[in-house]
Amino acid sequence: MAKKHVAVLMGGFSSERPVSLSSGAACADALEAEGYRVTRVDVGRDVASVLADLKPDVAFNALHGPFGEDGAIQGVLEYLEIPYTHSGVLASALAMDKGRAKTVAVAAGVSVADSKLMNRFDFTSSHPMKPPYVVKPVREGSSFGVVIVKEDQAHPPQIFTSAEWLFGDSVMVEHYVAGRELTCAVMGDVALGVCEIVPVGHQFYDYDSKYVPGASKHECPAKISPKIYQKIQTMALKAHQAIGCKGVSRSDFRYDDRFSEDGELVWLEINTQPGMTPTSLVPDIAKAAGHSFGELLSWMVEDASCLR
Image (cartoon, rainbow, N blue to C red):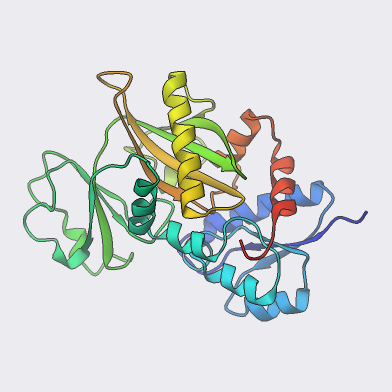
């Protein structure tokens, strides 16, 4: 039986275009190795007409950032009736909005850090909450625009009200949880392993830590107690299901165990389009769970559908 024709959507026009091109190339190569007929599509504003002419059996969504993971391209694929990977329109839009995703996760029993939503122009000479805290754009990925405000900073950074800020006016101010960076992938309705991310020479898991080889180390599985390990898996699956995610997602956590094993564990956000570059987390987590990169991608292609 002939394998499906898969259009790998990559590139796009968000700030995460370089990451998407890397993810898309890795996925296209691996799917070809698995025997699929693959067409690489560098997504532009004409993507609807390109796909209408191409008529693939499946669209493998390797886009990142706005338009790629916020429900927009998903809506285009629904309109064209082309089955696609990852989450559908509603879950994608919801997960991309950190504030609304957090509200849904809390209602499902997921532990989060205290936070508030603000307009960036509301930053004045006084702190919006007691430092340390984190400020992050509400609708960006790959840690773009994330700023950590330390305890010894007398005033909020000026960047938020400057013309150099390029990440929208809505920001989330969130209590900073010190400690370890952990992440858990969900595949279908199964929580895979928990991985610890150890940035090398960086304060936190920022853009370079994510995508520059050697800028972070992945401990898969994470060296934490079985109780905390299972708790993270449970929360990742709860968030995935409550937000309505499909296919593969990845939830990120902070875990402060400096003073006790129970410590403080909080869910930060869910990624409906986790990176699939050679340095990405989900392929490492899947490998530790016994799934090769090709097997993971094949499962995603066969899982693809409309009305997700």
